[in-house]
Amino acid sequence: MNIPDFIAALLTLAALFSYINHRWLRLPTTIGLMILALMTSLLLIALGYVVPSVALWGRGVLEQIDFEQALMNGMLAFLLFAGALHINLGDLAKQGPVIALLASIGVLISTAIIAVFVWFIGKYVVGIDLAFIYCLLFGALISPTDPIAVLGILKTVGAPKALKTNIAGESLFNDGVGVVVFLVLAGIAGFGHGGHIDMTVGGIIRLFTVETGGGLLTGLILGFIAYRMLKSVDNYQVEILISLALVAGGYAFCNHLHLSGPIAMVVAGLLIGNHGRTLAMSDSTREHLDTFWELVDELLNAVLFVLIGLEMLVLTFTGKFLLAGLVAIPATLLARFIVVGGLVQVFRRHRKMTPHTAKIITWSGLRGGISVALALSIPKAIHGEHIAERDAIIAITYVVVVFSIIVQGLTVAPLLRACGHGK
Image (cartoon, rainbow, N blue to C red; front, side, top):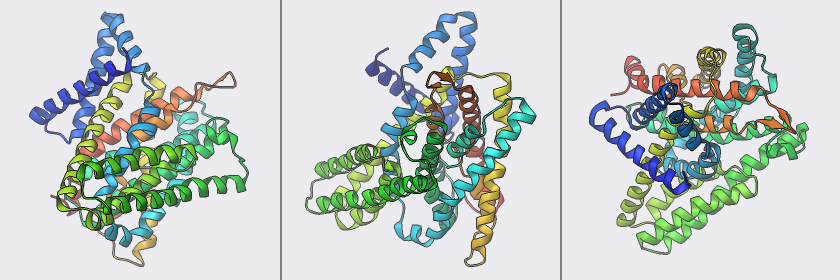
């Protein structure tokens, strides 16, 4: 199946699953689509035992698509920009210190804690010998909460504004930090573009500074240029094209210079969504721009979560891998609770915090497509030497992500109500 045919099939499945979910399941869209895609994958796998060619066909089709490239260098830029457009900058600034620590130090500490947990689980519980560097890689890819999954759920639940801002803000920024941490560890492991960078302490600090600081500065500069262009015209078609160019061109520019594209798109989205929408657009343009980016957001979300569900067809699962994934679920949640709880206690001394903040932030920190994409970016071999840990890391990641999206996603609202918040 060629790429245009695959895109047509994927859009058809997304539309069909959306209809079924809206008509009968009535689940949050992203969760409903992924459940239906998972059921489709399981059906194809089951049919494969009767008609082997069916499973082979499905696997062959999925293997033609590079999930990591499709998300990290395709959909992610548009999804992050669309998500940041509707975040209030004033509310974000009020929660700035909390978000900054959760998205930076929180990711680093969580990476280390999860790595220790997974190494211990693999060696002493499941019987899988995982090199510690790959446990650290798993910690880095699973620690950041996925903004795509989190923002989708936040639309459907009620929560105090400060809490909602903390959760959304952390999810928008910590994936950029998580990607940088992953690249550093990939360099130590000997693959990725990190492998061409000085891995001394000074080199690692420079990598962090250039990737994150460069991404932030690039987002500000490109966002400001786009803002000035938007302010100089009053034509919604032209202004929507400018926003598209900002996202597509800006992300490609960051990738070329090895800057953090995710952080750049979040910053640009915040600038356009706040100053651009209020100071540079007419009411008509604002309405058209909001409608356009809402459609882009919903369309790409639908496609992404269908892809996540179908990805099961190409993964390698064994009993040990599945057990490791199931045991890793409470381990990752515990690590997140330790980090979030510790930081919340620090801030509670200086500012008023919503009751049960640590529990809610921990449980609403969903993992999603970014974690799967980073896991799939681990190569099958380095210099001809097979990486035995790759299949285990991918399988464990997938189990944690599926649990996170389905179980945590469906229970965030009940948890909020139990804690005295939400609708």
